[in-house]
Length: 62
Image 1 (cartoon, rainbow, N blue to C red):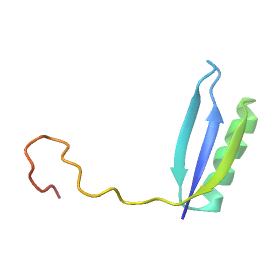
Image 2 (cartoon, one colour):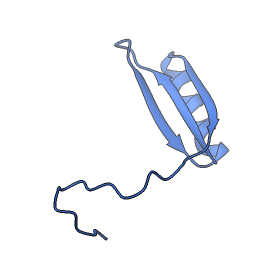
Image 3 (cartoon, rainbow, N blue to C red):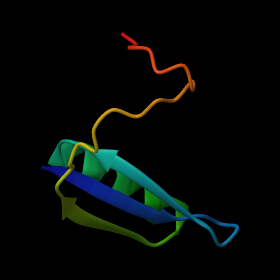
């Protein structure tokens, strides 16, 4: 399980950040409150999607 923190940006956009502890999520919420922007947290489950070939060569990367 993970936590998805969504915070508003002053230019009207949003920032999404995945964190793995409640403490990290709380820090992000506190920072957003100090900046005066909206923020929310959702509990999410991350799922693997399999191998993704990012370089187009089909090789394994470490």
